[in-house]
Length: 241
Image (cartoon, rainbow, N blue to C red):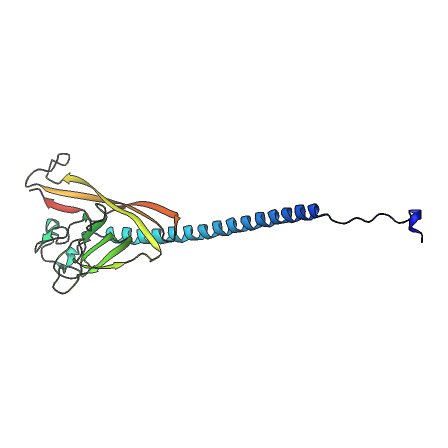
């Protein structure tokens, strides 16, 4: 065949410019896909961590609500003098204040610890009856008993009582606060609508507001805050001094 007769078409290839443009476009597409995948994976991971944090904080909040609700319970059916004003779980016995109250550990926020007592052993106030929750070193701790057989204290301070962590190591508790609201009723005959005065029997109902906040220790973008209010079942009876 004679090339000169023009029967063969001119052959063309890919220029360097075309190759560079194609490579750049391909790289941008891959970067876009990779970025979308990474963002999607991170979002999925954060959603999972958020759900886990929410579940743990709710579980801890539920534990606190259920136990605080029992504050002041006294099984009067097993005692000889069932005078509600003498409830040993609502008064100071042997120098130990067993009333529902808030304190704090040194260095922690005010009212980040709550103490209370209730009848766990059916009328025996000397048994394990003193309980509490506190914020300590970015964790929620629960009082499980005295620190030793010689420990006769009931406080939130270090050295008073034995406390056990109830939040996991990878969750950082950033806030824990308790607020006690009371309402008093005068039980003197004919004075139900009057304020309690000296030597008059009064009934005190109580509510505890709880706020707990936390975050995942290794990802502080994952955070959660929850609140709840507990109505204490057992009213406190006392004679106004």
